[in-house]
Length: 334
Ligand code: PBG
Image (cartoon, rainbow, N blue to C red):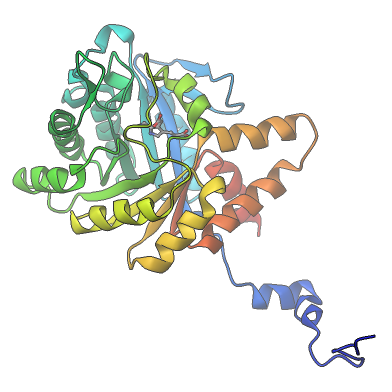
C-alpha cells in the first residue's frame, strides 16, 4: 500500500480562508459593482406604449417617453450606461436599411431625449442593420443571397455618425463585417466626433442564445442564418484574430458575446490583450434563468449574481445584462 502523502496534522488547510463571512470577504478575489453594468433596453415608436416580450419575462418594449420614466430608476440605482435597441415598423424597413441613419430615426431621437434628461448616463448605441433591414440580416443581402461586406460598411458608417450627432457616447458595431471598425473610426473623425468611442462586438458568435432578442425586435433573418459573418462557436483562436484586428482598427473596448457559454474566450481575450473587454449576457441566457426561476427550480437572484460575478472573474471589465436593475438592487443592499 502506498504511504499517504499528507498525514495529519495538515500544514495546508485551505478551508481556514473560508472560515467566516468576514474572512471570506477579505480574501474575495473578484468584486461585482453596479458600475460594471450596462442595461440594454428595447424601444419602439409612438407615445405612452409598452408591450411585454413573452420570451423575456420582466422585460418590455416601450416608447421613449416611457423609457425616460424607467431611467429615473436606472439612474437612481447608479447604473452607468444603457444600450437602446429599436423595434422598427416593417413599413420602414428596406433592403439597404436606409432608416438606420435617419437623423430623426427612433434611435437618434431616443439618444437626444435621454441625453437631455440624463446628461451623465452613458449611451451605447447598436450599429448593425438588422432592425432596419427588410431581409433581417446585419448586412445588405445581394440578389444571390450573399451578405455584401463593403456596401454594408458604408451604411454602418453613416449610422454611426448619425448616432454620434445625436449624442451617443459609444457606438457599438455588432454586425461582424470586416473592416468596419477602421471605417467607422475614420467616418467619426472626419465628422468631428473624435471623442465618440467605439465598443466593438469583436467576438460575436452565431448563437442560438439570441432567439428571444430577435422576438423582441422582430428582427430574425428572413432567409438563412448569420454564419457567414458571426463566428463559429467551435472557435477561439479566430476570436483572437477578430479582437486583434478591431484593436488595430481603433476599437476602444472589445466584446465577447454571449457570455456564459464563452467564458474561456472572455478569459483568453482579457489575458491576451491590454484593452478593456466587455461581455454580453444575452437574451437567451436571461430567459433561461428566468424560466427556471419562474418554475421554482432555481433561486433567481443567487444564480443571476453568480453568473455576473463569473464574467468579472473571467476578466470582463463590464457586463451587458437585462438583469442590470435587479442586480443593482441587490448590490445596493450589500
Ligand atoms: C443585432 C444584435 C443581436 C444582439 C445584439 N445586437 C442579435 C443578432 O445578432 O442576431 C443579441 C442580443 C441578445 O440576444 O440579447 N446585431
